[in-house]
Length: 289
Image 1 (cartoon, rainbow, N blue to C red):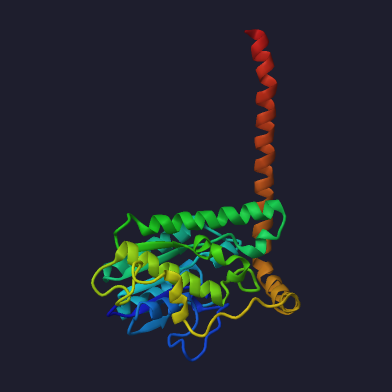
Image 2 (image 1 turned 30 degrees about the vertical axis):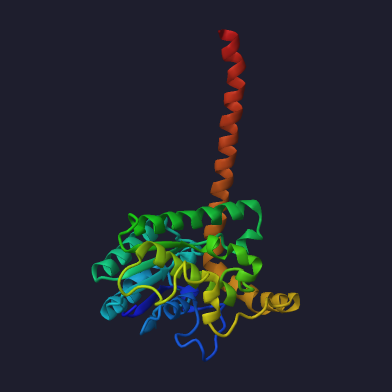
C-alpha cells in the first residue's frame, strides 16, 4: 500500500501483551504488525490504555483525520464494558461517528468484534451472563457501524481469528492478546482486507491466498512470540498486578456490576414465575374446555 496506517482505540491496539524487538519497525500491537504486513510506508499508533469510545471521538479521531491515512484500525469498547455507566447506545453512536468521519476522508477502516472477557469467564454464572451480554451489545454496535459489505470497512472477529492458537493467544491477564495473539490477529486482518477490499495499492506485492499460506506471514513479524509463561509466573502476576488492578477498577466497576447482576437475577426469577403461572393455567383451561 502507498499510504499510512493509523491505529485508534484502547490497550489492545496500543500493544499491551505483545513483545517486540528492533525488527518490528512499527512497534508492538496487532495494528503495527498489520502495517508491516501491508508494507505501509508509515504508521501512527494513537490508541491509549484505558481509552473508551468517547475518548476515541474526542481525542484520537481529530488527530487521525489530520493524518489522512489510507487505512485506519479501531478496537474499542472493552473499557466501556468495565464501567458502571456502561451504555451500548453511547458506544454505537461513537463508533458510527468515528467510522463515518474516517471513510469521509478516504480511509479504509478495520474494526474488530470482541471475544468474551476471559477474566470474567472465571466468575460465577450471573457475572458471566452480564459481561457476555455487554460484549455482545458492543459487537452489535461494531457490526452496525461497519455498514454494508464493500463500503470500505471490514470487521474482524477476534475470537475466531485466534481460536486455533487456544490459550496461547492470550496474555496472562486473560484480557489482552499474547505476542502470538497479536500476530495472528494481524494476519487475520490482512486476509480480510485482501478478500473484501482488494484494490490498487492495497495488499502485499507478490503475496496472496494463491501465492503462499497466510499462516506463513507470521514469519515476517520478528521476533517470534514468546512461550506461554509458566504457572508460577502467572500466579505472581495475578498477586502483584492483577489483584491491585482489580481493586482500583472495582471502585467504579463493582457497584454497577452488582446492580446488573441483581437485575439479571430478578429477570430470571420473573421469567420462571411466568413459566410456572402458564403451566398452572393449562390444566384449568383444559378442564374448562
